[in-house]
Length: 386
Image (cartoon, rainbow, N blue to C red; front, side):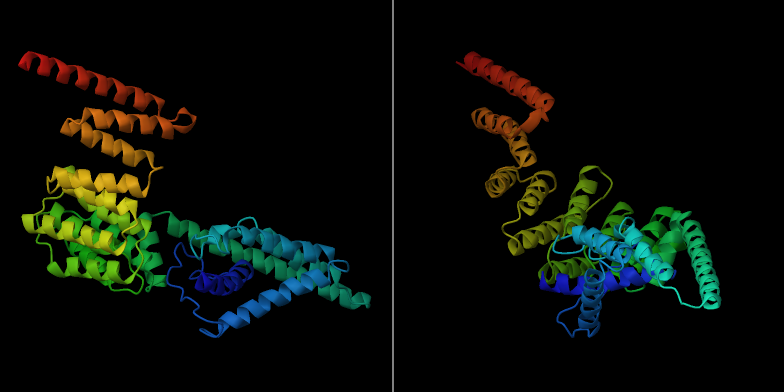
């Protein structure tokens, strides 16, 4: 949290610079390559940025009576940024956070430009001419950059290439470029496919890279019946061991399981074991994460075909997250498959308790009918057996 708040000071100053004097390399979709502030002087621009923000806020408060429009504009910008650029655990940097607050910046600037006026009439005319010329130049600059961005965004491959080349240290930009290369490649033997795989390898080595580029390497190799390199599994172990598991990381592991279930990926037995060990390691590193435990249960049931292990893991998942409807539903499905209809009935009651606002009414009716049918069939079979 401390690093986040310290870094946001530098980010807010960058926002001001991008609003007033943008540049093509600054106007980017991804900014995950920004260095974190680990102290007031690490880097030194942290303290300087916060001092500048404090001075700007102090000036707005001090001039609120003499220059009310300037004060309003500055406070409007700070109010907008306070919603998403403080302690809330969102992305550190995103341009769209300025769509509404940047009107405050322009309001403050125009308030300064049109409030101050020299006493001499000739100088007032010159100043007015300079202001009009400067504003016109800014409008032309904004129009030029808007046209450049529209042209770049008009083609997905062009956008991915632009992002990766202007932000070569951005893991997300690098991953997007590799992804576009692999999507548009004409088969695994094409040069573009090989370029995409190399791009993913390079992206996996960038500081701050998550599991996505390595997941893509494993995914595309398994899909095209190519050997999966052991170092990819080792590098994924290293990322899990040295960084927090993000939603993207969990999604990457889930996709490796799901692609096998869907018949898209063809894993060798050794790769199934490697994937299981990787997920087990993630659970070991994050024992309180119910989503990872559920992921391991998914692997055990569908890839390892170890239903007893999958059932134990789902019991653990609902114990870790007792308010999660989907986890209880997964447990219900496993109990139905195992013929544990009494336990399934208890879980169904729990699903009804979690069905707030009737969102899952249709699904619960279906599960209720399925349980009733299975219970009747089981009872008839036992009667005939006797």
